[in-house]
Length: 346
Image 1 (tube, rainbow, N blue to C red):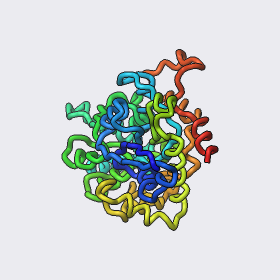
Image 2 (image 1 turned 90 degrees about the vertical axis):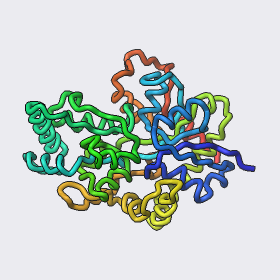
Image 3 (image 1 turned 120 degrees about the vertical axis):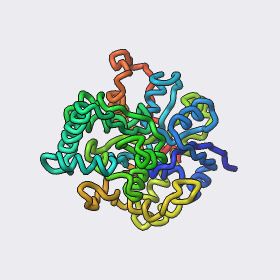
Image 4 (image 1 turned 90 degrees about the horizontal axis):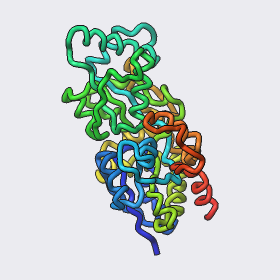
């Protein structure tokens, strides 16, 4: 007998592990049946998790921590017994802005500091000329995407990037928002940056791994009460997720993984595009070469343990959290002990 577990996800490559766990039967082998619910936005995922409309969710690591501390939303304690990977984001700008950045760049445009300084010069010139300010898209206020954009802009002289408006846009709509001129650039997870490049609405400037080497990304979040009361078979979910990661780690399985993820009910894009991303070919980058970065997205077993180090890094990004007030008994969202417990009970 298997137990149904409803899992919400946003169509991104880093939703691969719960999807593959279901498609390949790792969920059933571990006594569960994943019912996957596709959503466009992180706000919807957050609300469905809060109100119990899903049992667990593919979720932004910083959002899980922010919600648990009552930052930017009502306080809903969440628990993360397993992470879903590192890296995978890209900074993409409109072609006209890429041309201006390259024209003003002093140094190699593969260097984020060089492009950020060029962006700052463009921003200042537009401000002096009375032109509208540049606008960038983020997927959620508390996300690695927000931190990465602010960090990149800070390298160029922006005070924490605070001068540039950041607008929330659901990941699948980033490329179209750029094409329509609603935003001038964005930071988003694969495959939506690559899709903007392919449709001609964007140019890829930098991969997130070039700004933060091992950037914690998505997690599988549960409401804390469901784990404390053991009302959800979370240990089986963790084990199924690890099984999927071990399977995906084998290079001979990448093509099959891409085919499964490409289905309309999941990502709904060409399987060859997903295969490129999983193979370390994240897409055209400045200045129009094809960069191969094996670590551009990592979904391997090493990235699945939710460490205290990663949680502390993320808390440092969220300025609204009063770190000094966090005592030793404060709620910990990342639970490496639960991760180890789940894998030990096999």
